Amino acid sequence: MNWFKITLWKRVMLGLALGAALGLAMRYGLGPEGASSLATTWFKPFGDAFVNLIRMLVVPLIFTTLVAGVTAMGDPARLGSLGGRTLLMYMVTTWIAVTIGLVIGTIVQPGAGFDMTSVPASELASAQARLETNDATLGLAERLIAIIPTNPVASLASGDVLQIIFFAIFVGVGCLMAKDLGRPLAQTLESGAEVMMKITHIVMEAAPFGVLALMTWVMATQGLGVFVVLGKMVFCLYAACLIHMVLVYGGIIKIICGLPLIRFFRGIADAQAVAFSTSSSNATLPVTMACTRNNLGVSRSIASSVLPLGATINMDGTALYQGLIALFAAQAFGIEMTLPMYGMVMFTATLVSIGTAGIPSVSLFLAATTLSVIGATPEQTVIVIAVLFPFDRLLDMMRTVTNITGDSAVAVAVAKWEGELDEDSFRAKAVV
Image (cartoon, rainbow, N blue to C red):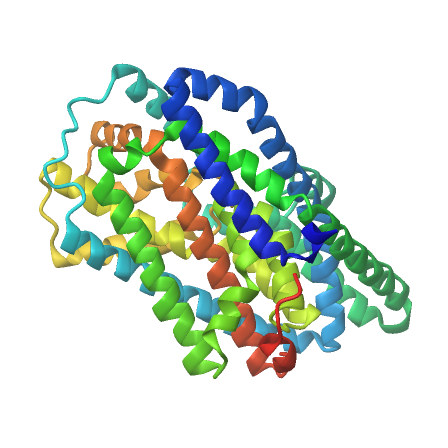
């Protein structure tokens, strides 16, 4: 069929564009209430089904590919070298992301003159309830302890990605230490990893239709009003994310790795489109892994270790957003930002972003921690979150694109340094 002859990323982008156009036509043709009801009834279920399909793959894919990746290294000591490089790159790019967000926010002043008194009481009550049920107050020590699973089976069942990564690394190292006796288990999980990648390809054929349904729902329920109400905030986030992706990730690919930048962005176009429509790094992970392995030439061992870790701790878009929210609140409430406060925001935003769940809008509620360092009161925090929450979906879309792009760039760089990058595949035409 001619449909399948079109490159998948082009089909996904076509679904994205058609969905946006259809959703806007419904909103401005039927009115907000009619469009919202129609889109929620007839389009959102198909979008949710697509998201569930790719979420179905996340846990088995992470576990099998990470164990297979560790066993493919052959030497447990090599895991420490690779992990050290990966974590260092993730931390540096996150810190740069926060800096870019603060610079853009200082220049554009998204919160200056914003009227905070018009927030409906219902929105304030909803924001308060969401904050009370969120784990944003967990300290760093508690977050680190929570990584260790007390029941690996329960962690697999609940989809706790950090705990799954922790357990999978130990299983992989155990297979290597057991040598010949561990080989049958290692081969079984390697086979499972390949099967999961094939299933990912099957699911991705539904991506254009899932993306179309999701974008129709988002545009029908949100419309373009967000760009009017919070235009400067939207502009700041999108501009900062684009600058970060082009300069920082582009610098990693072009300057550090010496590879063609256009090929990199073409190679991850599918993952970016899925990330934009689902707003979930975890849901996008199977697609990110397929793109980096098949289009960018990253080896299985690198992709299966670097990418699951990145989907959990490398949240550059989230960290950047935390800085912007702090500035938005400070400008709206007239809080004077001093140099030490900028430093605290950078430090806190970086820490808060680590381990943030890769699901929609979680990072907005983690802003309670970031806002506390600039002196915002609990009441002011509730107001800021109540203002931003109705529009957070469109902001979260771009944050997620930034996150998965960073994961892919770091995976390419680590693969290059470890001698496990197939540059011929990287430079070739994308196949996914």
